[in-house]
Image (cartoon, rainbow, N blue to C red):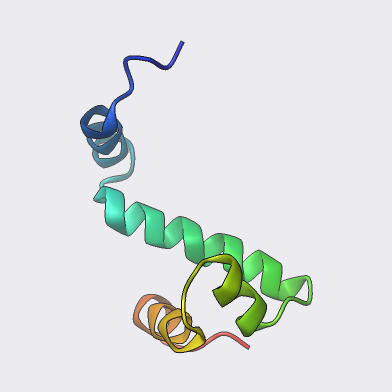
Length: 71
């Protein structure tokens, strides 16, 4: 069913539907999911581990996108 959906096609669809690049869209998705998990009681360290990131990198991503760090 999704065999036609290669990397380039997915990137084009995301730009067309959201106006964002794939990287920006992925970052927004990551922030949204992390925000929900923080609200459920996960720690920044737990989220960073799950995302294969350093906690400082996660904080930086939040600060750039939202103007504040999580917590």
